[in-house]
Image (cartoon, rainbow, N blue to C red; front, side, top):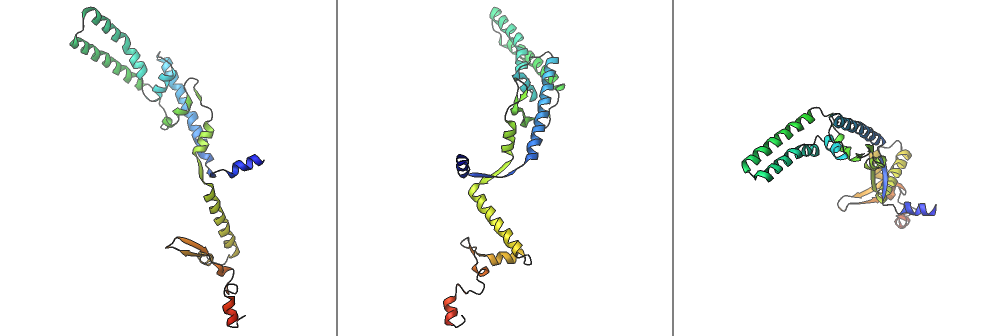
Length: 221
């Protein structure tokens, strides 16, 4: 118990609000994204393409760089073997590379055309998915909770809460007074020096404690 109290006293921030609804909304969006990722994986399998964590992740972002480069490798190697035998020809090499790239671009467009769609906010949640296991990474709820938690300096919050409590006390104590009148009775504000003082008039309306000597001299006490 003593150790726990010590830890709390050393805290520099204080939680003011946790948006639990936002946390749950993000968790649902993340689950939807995971389901979409699984559809993308199945698309790669059905298309007889390389299925790895990397190719799945790229496809989820509408990219097929790994797959496209692999598709180019056989023809590039064939060109290189040909050049090794007959020698390098700049014009022929450029034409061959243009043809290879054209085929690669066509493949890329074909893959994009039938790629399962990802939600508009999927890009925000892909980082929380384990593409090896196709699972949500551990600790996500805690991450989202922290994201949607409002915190502030503990000392400032404590002072603010004390002020709110005191105002509520006086508002209840003087139900027939307007809020502005109550505030004017409570505080003396120096706007130029940015200072605020308690008005003692509330506690000593006739100034008996503060002007005792003068009142006695005037035979008023």
